[in-house]
Length: 329
Image (cartoon, rainbow, N blue to C red; front, side, top):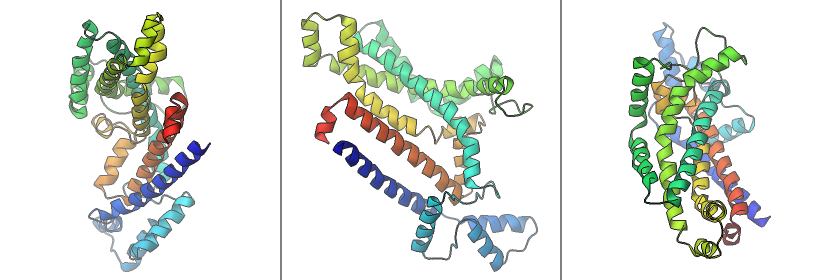
């Protein structure tokens, strides 16, 4: 139980530090969201006044003329109340509305693609590492080559061949715009069809890292004393692979999977941008381009919570899988 409380305390401090950085970093960027709104108003023929500026500042979560520590306190109060502010990029929409509209698309696309890449990579890596030097090792250079290819380049290649040349899959969008979004078979089939190409990009670009990492850990684990002892006892190779070698070799992959799963919330910015996919990644790029403090902070908050939550779960799971970690903590 003390192990759990220590972990909870550590992640509570990490959360506070992340929230503080989330407040500070956007304010270090050049520009001001209030100035952006005033510029848009002026472009449409309006006349910005000091009262207008004050109204925009209050609408976006506080007076930007207040001392920084006052803005920080107001920021924490608003977070406690669930108020993430108003987005400049999608004005007058609330930040929470923008995030909750985009989040399901990213979680389904990037989440399923990440899980598929991790499972395939770990399983193939375990098999390749179990028999090093065989023809299975020829899989490693091919997959690592795909992992070294930039996301946007691989996305463009797949879009060109599978979307334009072969016309098997649509190249852009999240669903057929002629359909009304809803939980019906026609819309879900369309969403799956439009999401296949970006998901394939993520899987192909990610599987090599999982395969290589698991393969190297398997090769290292096979030389450990407990594996040699199991072989000397005459245990079946399948049992040694499953209960001794794979169980210990997979531990680093579990930690890596937690980080990857946490970053699912942030989406794959480049992939979503190339395929015009309506996920968090494309919204985050829009927020950065427009210096949209409120939207950036809201998205970074969700990303932070997802990463910390995933790592906390895996830390606790790690303690169950390997009791030695509880003794060292």
